[in-house]
Amino acid sequence: MNVYETHDLAALLAGNPYPGRGIVLGKTADGRQSVAAYFIMGRSENSRNRVFVKEPDGIRTQAYDPAKLADPSLIIYHPVRQMGRGLIVTNGDQTDTIRDFLEQGLPFEQALSTREFEPDGPNWTPRISGLLSPDGSYKLSILKSADAEGTACARYTFAYPGLAGVGHFLHTYVTDGSPIPTFQGEPERVAIPDTLEGCVNLIWNHLNEANKISLYVRYTDLATGTWEERIVNKYQ
Image (cartoon, rainbow, N blue to C red; front, side):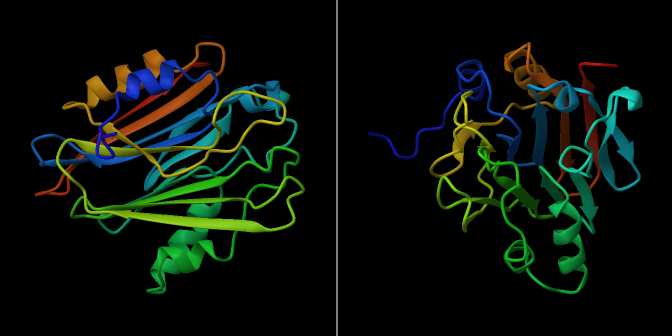
């Protein structure tokens, strides 16, 4: 068994009808660019009724058809926020919690100690979060229910140095189901495409067609801090 195997992200996505929401952080093979990607999927009409829109410091979710928005509490948030030269990426409003703590000089882990999984039993959707540093290193976190009843929260944080050509993929669900099974184990080690367009196409084209909603990808030059980004929305 090769514990350092770098998996094919396309194959992981194509083989999973419902990874839910997913974060990929990593670095290009030449070591010059850090990479961040975030996607959302949905099964219900309320969840599918979304698009990503740009904000000055990142992106937010927005109802595609405001008239059909039933409950904004877990689907409208800022998934991506710039923090200095770093980047916060999450699947919920814990983006703002992390930003507020970092602004006070307090760590990522401390911010997430104040949060837990989503109150959507029996799924108890995990809160997944990432922090991409200016040097290309990064952290990933998952907060998930410790039992089927949602009585307690298990917290896991993973810190990575940022290796050339390597990324890590963390998503909310193992696959589709009822209830939907929560992600298990460490974030998956994956190969990172060399270009932004290559990454956009790889992820978007291999997400389940019926369930995919929106995708954000950003490539940042580690020397200059400049970046390029793309948003893809199914319903726009």
